[in-house]
Every structure is written in structure tokens, then in C-alpha cells.
Image (cartoon, rainbow, N blue to C red):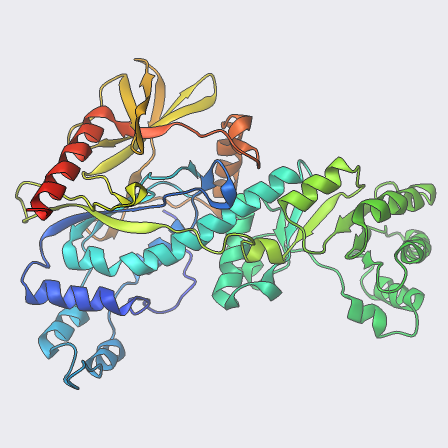
Length: 491
């Protein structure tokens, strides 16, 4: 079994919101903390106005859960917190409880690299109420951001078609952790490599890079700068040509390329980082080809995203490799995923389950009771529908799925339709039982999953809505519970 990624060398139990700890204390004080609970982690809308998402971040979750503990200095810090009356916020016995806490939760999750959709539980957590509650914030922190970035990367790579995309976002990413998470998630989403050396070391992602404008400006002229770089790194020559005059820079790169060839090396390519990338790449391609360098690639950067890349493609840009930084690493135009973590069931240990529903005046925020699994159906090598169902009720061969936001939208799944269950065991009673795949296996899974989606769902503008719904009995249960909760709370 492959070990987890071990990004962090200490427990991240304190990576949480204060209200998780105050609720945990109140559960403990009320003597309900050992009730058995079930929570779902899910999101309500696909990001970027798209038709799909790619789940990512589970490896971080595994890392966090495996090392979860409150160390002595953690409880010492918590002992110093004060309430509004200047008295300790937590009593000593509760802090002793935290200090000795060992997770006993069972966790099921959809594997990383899987295409997923709104309302589907990406992770299901079952265990003592206090422990389930304490896992909320770190899980959301890991899954929300990496799912967002993996999805953005998949969109960018789709726009680039078969061209490689290099993730260039470290300098604009949101801190060190953000930079590492971006590189990992972007690679899973389809990027071919990253400029982030630490990510390359930690995750085994291929790294790429050449030089910046400062290298050229450090010399008296561009020709000298290219020549010196080729002298020192003849096996890594992609020249940034837009420091002064882009097309003249291409011609100078060609001259150095000829001298490289005489020494048994090749000019790998040039990079364009400003200006009219379509116009410049077309003319640069002509210069390179006429000089005998048809295999030299043209790399483009400069605030690219899926929409700009699509536009450049439609203009016939002669670009072979795309360096995408800021708009990928910051998930430009949607800064957050919006995933949530909601209780769906509760019981006394060994007792009967009491299903839980959060009712809201916003229908999209009303939750679904039960202990859920997601079944994905396929027909003729295409995904055709997903059904969310209650594991205690089970699912018939052939079923009706109902859109939870519009009961008139229903889909009948014929008997004997091929399917797979998406949530798989990751932890059982606190012990990891998951054979974690490598990052390349996760990346390959994402590519295969995307290929099984209808093209109408992958398109950027007004994508078709993939059918996801509740199994009819679960939908009926949810409706009855909503009516019951509203009736009780209006008495």
C-alpha cells in the first residue's frame, strides 16, 4: 500500500475554525459527543459556469487524518483562550480529552481525478459526532481548492487541445501551500509540467523552465545574452525573445541555434510573453522554418486562460506549448469552490439512525437526509447519469432518478445498465484501508473520465447539464422530511 504524501511533518488538528472546537466542547459537555454521525462533503454548483468538476485533494485529506492529534503545545494554547467573562473558554478535562483523542472515523470518498457534479458527496464521514465535526474545516480546505484548480486546469488543457500546458503560477499563487496545491492539482487536471521545483520534488511532477527578461537585460545586447546562455546550458535552450523587439529576437535566436547545431545541440524553441501572440507566433514560425528549425517549439505565456487560448487557436496561432500562470493558480474569475460539509444522519451508538435535513429558504441549500452512495451509469462508453441513493434502502436494478431542485425532471435508468459505485472505503474505524494511486495514475484517470463525458458537457459556453438526481425513494424521503421539519418548526 502506497503511503500518503507527507507534505506536513506535524499534525494539522489546529488547522480549524474556532467554532469547530466550541461545538466539540459543547457536544462533550452535553454528553452527546459519542453519538454516531454521518456527514457529506459536497458542492452545489460547478465552477466557472462549466458542466463538470474534477475532484482533487484526497491525498491531502489522508495525510491530515493519519496524523491527526492534539499535541501538548496545542492544548496549552487552547487552555489560554478566554471567553467574554475573561474565564477559560475550555475546561481542563475537555483539553485532556482532546490530547488523548484518536480518530475512529470511517471515511469513504470518490477517488481523485473523477469527474463529479453538484450535490454528489465527494467524501462521506461516519463516526463519533465530535470527531466528524473536527474534520470539517481541514477537509473542506483541501478538497475545495484542489478541486477548483484541477477543474480549471482541465478546461485550460481542453482549450489547448493536444498541445502541452505548463503550469507557471507559483509566483502569483496564494502562498507556499497554495503554490504547491496548485501545481499538484493542475498536473492532475492535465497540465504536462510545472515550473515549481518543490512540487517536482514532492510530487514527481515534470518541471520545465528557461530564463526571464532579467537574463537578457544583464548583458549589453540580446545576442550576447542568448550566446552565453547557450554556452552554459546548451541542452535547455528556449529563448525568451520579446525583451526588445520580438521578431528580431527570433532572428537572433536562430543565429544562436545554428551555432548550437554545429556543437551537436539543438535550439529547442522560443518563448513569447507579450504582444499580439497570434500575429507574432505565425511570423516567428515562418522565421524558424525558413532557417531550418521546423522542430523548434513556440511557447506562449502572458495571462492566458481557456478563453484566450481558444481565441488564439481560432486565429491560427502557431503556438506549440502554453505557459499558464496567474489565471490558473488563482482560479481566475471564480476564487472559491463553495463546497460544504453537512450532517445527514445521527444515532446513539448501536441504535436506529435518525436522518437529518437542513431546510433553507434557498432550495439549493436544503440538504438530503440519509447515508449516501453515488452510482454512475454508462452506456456505449459514455457516462449517462448519476444517482444518489441511501445505502440502507439500497438500489434496484433499474431506477428512477429525480432532480432535487425540480421534481418534474426525471430520468428512468433501464435494467442491466452498466454502473460503478463512486464512493470507496478510505478509512475504517480510523485505520487507512485505501491503496492510494500515484499522481500519474490520478492524472490518467482524469483524462479517461473526461473522455467519457459527452462533448456538450465539456464545452465552455452553456454546457449541457449532466443528469444527476436522487433515487426516487430518497427523493420522497427528503420531501417528507422537509415537510415534517417545517411543520415542527412552525408550531
